[in-house]
Length: 235
Image 1 (cartoon, one colour):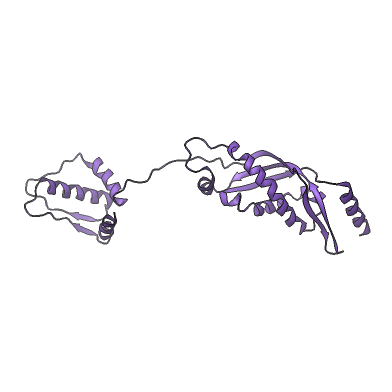
Image 2: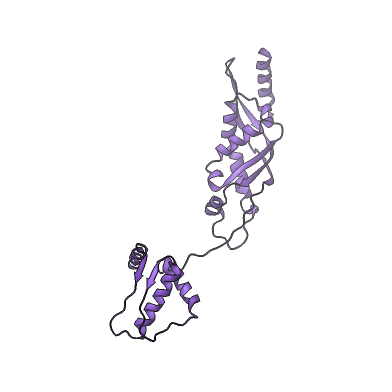
């Protein structure tokens, strides 16, 4: 294989190639040089390929298809060309993915201006949509070399688990913006950005991105709600 590549590299260096045979060539020698000439002509039409035939010798004019196929193998260093396959990806927004937090999420309510900070437990639920943002990455990291259709139900459960897990760091990023829990559902763009950042390794690096998120009102327990209201009234 290495020898074939070395020969191929040498051929690429020159614009004129002259083919020689041994003295008093037999049929095998003549046939192989004729075939090599046609392969080179088909593979490198811009090069001048020279071969002097013995007097009276002619080449069959119906071998082009065979030589062309051999020529393709020649360009791959003697190997057959790689398989060519076509895959279709749904790049539209995939909607209707419901989620809910099975256990409370910690959220830091803060107001740096008045020096207020309180950790609260919140619960939320809603629906999100996602898109295949990078089909090549999605193929490489997720669906692989599939023979049949790869459908969303094969990854929905995994994605939902990862989405809910990412809510904690995403809410942490929103807390730094000094948002109160009740304000988060109205901050869809900020939440979407925070979620895509939190899902970098799980989704984005696999060619998936959060498209939209719709949150229902976030709930707090009565004690946390009371403390926040009292502090707000002090302002």
